[in-house]
Length: 120
Length: 107
Image (cartoon, rainbow over all chains, first blue to last red):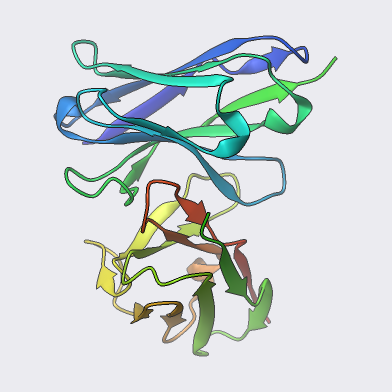
């Protein structure tokens, strides 16, 4: 059974940092693109970043470029999102999502999400 | 970036009704279009990929069509368990974008 379990969310002050983790199991993690998708309270879905199977390619939504870094550790079956210079508008539930083997843009499995709140 | 315009933003229909949601892309995205269902407090679930392919295990009352810039998602006979918000999402390029969502309620 495919499982994605996010952790690391919480309350952080504006300008602060947070590192999210996603533990994957039930599939060959190193064979799949992986993504982070977020959802602000009461709002729609927004793709944040994705990373290729070997970590050689990474892409970001414009609003987080230069502040967020996506990474992965295939030996630990884990995905990460380092978030720096956090802003109030980054407040959201952050989901880890698996993409296809060849299709980076189809999110076929999702975690339960972790809430990040940026507030003073 | 490619903008995805989804309509309506909400709808109310009776059990058994046919429900249709549309999604328009700001430029040609071929068939690189997916549909997701999100129930309150839950993660999204993939229903349709590549515009018209039903994900394994998804009931056949759900369907999708379209290509280029105009896409349609249909529930052929609305069921009480279909109450949710539905999102389209494009992946024509590596800047992925979602539509604004359609909240489906029972009349």
